[in-house]
Image 1 (spheres, rainbow, N blue to C red):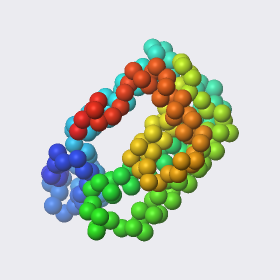
Image 2 (cartoon, helix red, strand yellow):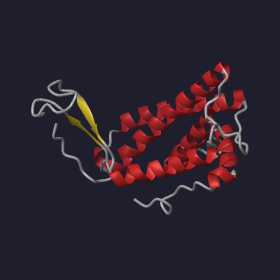
Image 3 (cartoon, rainbow, N blue to C red):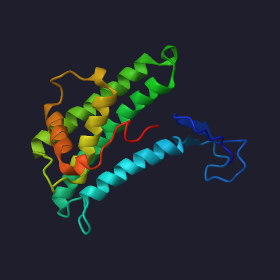
Length: 193
């Protein structure tokens, strides 16, 4: 299918349908296909994630627990963090890709509510499980929860009060102070667009 790709910093969804040449799995189905971010944005995210994973996961060490019960807890934490991350990304996309007069306030409010619901559950999970970022003991659940919180707070500061989500704030601050996180910096200065 010959969908037009752009190197712009936005993401779009294109309809694959009647004009499709048949070269894609969705040919003729009328399905939606995602048009990805620019290669530079993908590369920057990939470098940052790879750097953290390389630093945190020593050879022969997995970021996921082996014990079944611990793995189930980690997967729950991951699911909550990814749900919160997805909703925060949707808000950022809406704000950064649409002109203010075209933004749909009821939709933004609904997505913000969903983000906060996921963050409240994640906050309770972090508190209940006593998740902590300690040198040499950061697993995928801690990594994902920390990165999600940092992303949401950095890009959507208007969504949070100073006292909101204290367990996530503490987890993120502890993780950001670890040598592993300091060796894998992230910012516009490190990965300019």
